Length: 359
Image (cartoon, rainbow, N blue to C red):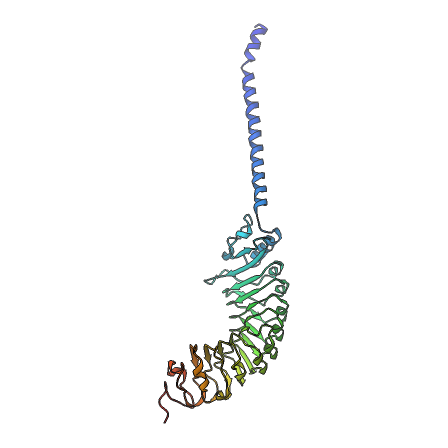
């Protein structure tokens, strides 16, 4: 066979090799382009995510400490934490400023204590753990690190231990709600030193001891004060004459003696509830401000007569003096006759409408 023929026989291999090389180059280019696209997508995501990386790290630790509950299913590490449920970020800084974990129905898988890592969110202004019956243990000390905190809601849980003194370090706090837990021990007097506090709820716990005398010297004298459904004892401090709380509820405790300091013609208080205590004072000597819309004194040992001054309360919507030791005729006029017999019965010798006429 001639050299020309031998050469001819190998000629078909050249296009095949060229094709293989071409496909290999295209494959390499496609792979490179894919890698570049993925890298670009990753970089775009990194630059578009608003959440602060440190805040995100803390939130994921909180989720872990809470045993990854279904409530926090939206807390996906591959997404922007500013979009997570129960989280809000500040519009300008994008730092986490609100963490509100709550449940409308009990989550049986949610069983934990307040994570210590909540104290590592330095820009928090609102912190809420609400209606989590399996959230137990004490109020976490690291909460004292949250110096920007304005609202603290730890309510309807099963927290135990004392109301801690360190909460008084939260000088920016305006609202503190620790209601519906199993907190015990005395109320710390230091709470009255919080300069911006205007609402304090400690009701529905197991607190004991007296109401601190310092509570007559809150920096915000119109503070809302709810201490009901505890085991508080002793007299109501006379110092409470200095404050004008919008609402004061001391009901269902074991308080004794006088409560007249909660009233007064110069007060701006709207709601007073001291029912179901052991209070004993002369109601006839008490002066009432026209700002009052609800007065509940039932189930005490209050004596004297109902003052005529109560007829001047044009906005009175709630009134109950039942189960006391009051005597005399119920003053006619104002709104006193708008309340039914249940508001007056079981007294020593009260009479007049809506009760039977005086003899």
